[in-house]
Each structure stands twice: as C-alpha cells, then as structure tokens.
Length: 179
Image (cartoon, rainbow, N blue to C red; front, side, top):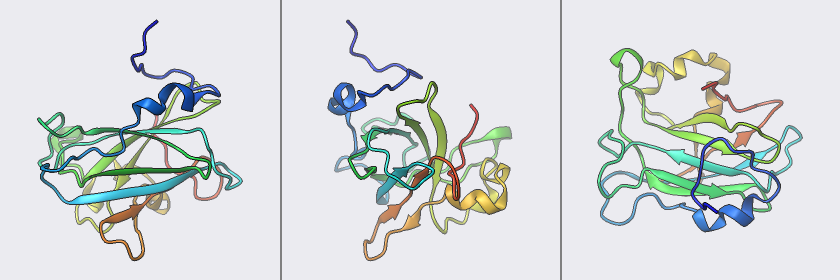
C-alpha cells in the first residue's frame, strides 16, 4: 500500500484519518528571508456553516519570487477543525511571471479538498493593499465586484496576521478557477 499523496482524489468522509500526519502549517522556518505573515480563516458552506473536514493545500514562491528555493518549503497543508478553521504561517511571496511574461502580484495558490468533491477547487489568496494587485493579469480576469473574495483582510489587532475565508457557494462565494 502506498502512503504518498496523489492529486485530485475524492476526499471522502475520512480526510482527517489519512492526512492529519501530513499537516504542514509552517512553511517558513527561522532563517528564511521575507515578511512573516499568518493566514487564518474558515471554510463555510452556502448556509454559513463550518466545513469540518476540508483540507487546504497552498503553494507559493519565496520572497524573491522563486519556486522551490532551497530551504523554503513553499508548500503547506492545513485541515479544518470543528469550526472550519485553518491556518498557515509563511512569508509574503515575491512577484512571479504570468501569462505573456507579465509580472503577477504576490499571491498564494490554494487547492481545497473536501467530501463530495470529485476534483479539488482552485483559488488564490492575494495580499491587501498590494500596489501590484490592480495590474495582476489573473485578478483582472475576475469581475471587479468579486475580486475581494480573493484578497485577504488584515486581522484586527494582530500585526502580520491576515484573515481569508473560503465560502463554497451563495452570497460572497469565493472565486474558483477552472484549471
């Protein structure tokens, strides 16, 4: 039996049993350059009820805008708790090349897995007040009135802390991309 993670599997009702040991919530150990950020949020369904068995995976560039940089993990995984909460401790990524060689705003790629999904959901987290956001070629594809679902908010009273929620459907639904 293989215990290696694979892509796009149906999560099923036993997510926490099989993947809790593979949690990676701290992407940037001491000594990694970059602006430290904590991202916390909730996964909720269309009725605003917490999803207690979702799994979020994130992938990001280093502060220099490079993927797979030595010493920087760049990949994280957090399972939601009974309140639908997840968390990551990382650094703000640098800008990376996008379509047509244009620079993208700093962002984190997010995959959401949960029961009932045959294929994971794909979305992004952008940083609040980043001057590159208005020029990001991917964010520009999203209708203006929905872009805020992709931009994290500053957590009140917590320097370096951001809040970003995943709303699966209904009012305020997070933008998901077809990939």
